[in-house]
Image (cartoon, rainbow, N blue to C red):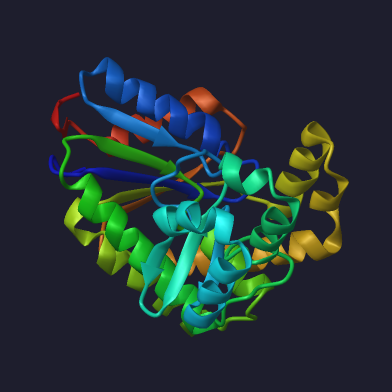
Length: 269
């Protein structure tokens, strides 16, 4: 891995150990004297994820301000303008959560991981790519190495497939658009995988008590996701490393992760 790498992306399907191993990588960097920040996929204050962000077009945003005049200043101060549209982060915002009507509306207008997408495919893509651009601009002002889990592939492809029935080509364009925005961070991606998607989903279903993981529908979805992700790895404009965990040997996998991080990231590691 290049010495100037400021972003490590850890990806893979559910049950590959992404969260645990990504956090462990963050601790490893810290032990080597390298300033690092770790964010898992659900972290509050995540610098790149747009979960818990409501989407509004310009006219819709103006109407929101008119309907909630007493909260208008709080809305304006937190809203992010993206082209002609607005993203409004609302997680943990007391002024929003105390108003049931407002909070319900914000939740119903989620940009990501929602059952009823509000944004069109082009709006979804543009909003996310611009947000990654903001993240890269901010990150490049510090010396930190960011370790992010499940936000580059997993969340993007989940929504693109589930909500927009995106083609392989549309997914590739979306992911490459993000890759372009973060190029200045010289990222590297570690992809964790296991030989059988079916066995993997049945196993993770049992240990997490989530029976839907083991359904034929979910297994088929995950097999298709893996196909797309493996294909994308060969097209990204930065280094990618695939590590297969055949025997659920987490120590071996982590050792391989440290190996691909290399000798020179920030300082000799």
